[in-house]
Length: 256
Image (tube, one colour):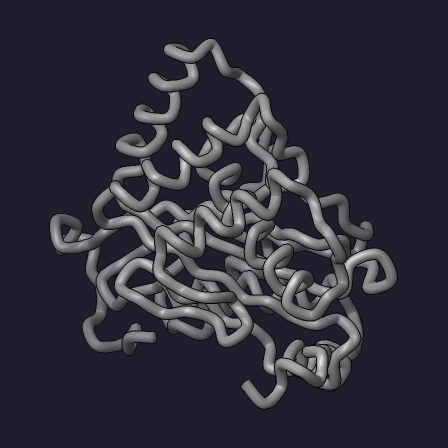
């Protein structure tokens, strides 16, 4: 992450300040019994309408108006989901960040006290910090997740990021239903694929779902990796995977 204090931002320097939009989603139930891996993903861009308008045009052209969700991939929607991934990859100045935890792992227990809500908030902050450059102010749009009444996600994330950066780094945080936003849905496709690939690597899923596997292979081939077990970094991607997940690898793969 770049040093956010390299230059003190002034209102008079508005033409040198980038206002970046971040779209955030999570994949994997917060209950470790039903889903062992929890991934939070974030897309950062300055001109979100380039990707949004392309997807909207294609939706109208195909008369396709369903929500894109990795867990609902089927014969009827996988082609459009692939188009969305290709459109993201073809869009300039757009970036993807993600962080995956093993909810049964030692790090999750030690760092987050096995508290999924604390993990969700702290990972959101880490991703925003990783995405933040010294001349940027972020606006975070996140998928709505029903949280306990004492959780003040929007307030906490904004305050903690601004305090860490010692400046206005996060202008605001808003959560709403992802059904109304294609960019959050694109995040869902990526993080769903990451989780599913990890579950295949650790043999949590057996034969697997045909269309989910097809999407996983499609994404990996397009970004050029074998699997997500070691994470992945490139100019466009910053994907972090908790090393505790490797402890779940079948013995036959651990020495590869």
